[in-house]
Length: 421
Image (cartoon, rainbow, N blue to C red; front, side, top):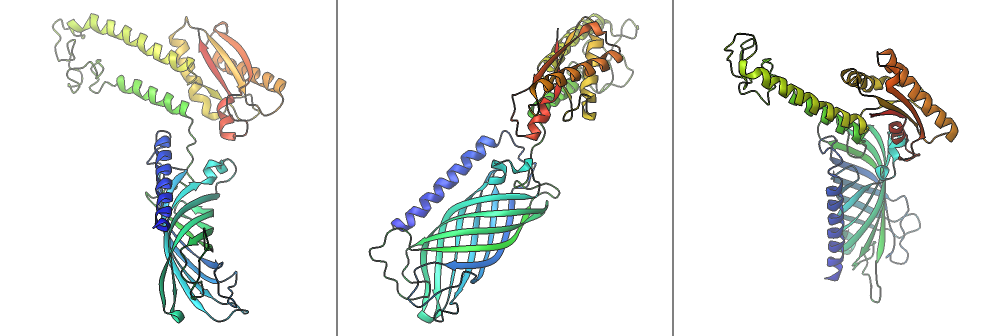
């Protein structure tokens, strides 16, 4: 009974650990951005270690092993897989003749070691998975009239992957299955396990095969998915979209939808203060709406300006630079235009133009580089009509808030940001 309880307990703990990790990461990774399931097929060699009867021996390159599995990833780092396998054992040239077979199944937790160790920073085609769990193995030998000697199995393994597209990957796997509960040797003879403790044998699998990814066509699998958009940019885009949605005016009557009692009124028809089609004084503006709209427009402009100022001061509007460059890259045009528009609409506002560099290189050089970046951005703003006296240059040198070893993280700190005054 203990031999059955032990693997089941290990499987339960593995599943619980994976599910906990899934909950922790679910808020940071888009669940619909990648495929999660895969079907996996492999063929190769199987080598069984003791127990063997004296005079019997098996080659290391013993053919064959075949396995078929289904894997499901809860997120980009953790998952589960269910695998069935079949092995055939034969004696080598120095062994007495025998032929046995083994078949069984395992349930294992999977860790995407490539994502854990940051492989995506240097390769897009190589990856490593680790897996561990438990199951059962059944031994069969026709010569001894042996049918289904059931063994408990604990399995550990590593899988190397080479991506061949979003549809799949070539996989090479090495697994070690530790077994207990032997009543027979691998060659089929009766096995006396009296006095032994722990595992009775080890079974090694070395296979080459294919993983076929299941899911929406064109999406990458969790094995390879990388979320490259910084969280700060996503948050800024979300806030700007909310502002744009709030200002929608479906029927073009001058009243934003969130104030309009008739958001589908006919174009050109005059409306009252609630957006209804009335204009008693025929002046082109609803009588009750004139003062109300002016007041609301002022309040709305003040509120929007406050929100936009929070975006800028919060670091969501930046100008980015390529490595060792002091001119903004092409992707930074929207950030510069955003600030130009704000400063022109708020002529009493001034701004600090603050430059940064990443940690690669000499500190003093990076200090000067950050100042040049700020000066060049100021020159663009001045050329666009902003008074130079409203812009104060600050060279802050190196930003040490991100990992120096991550090229993606360093992209986010090579920037010029702004503080409104």
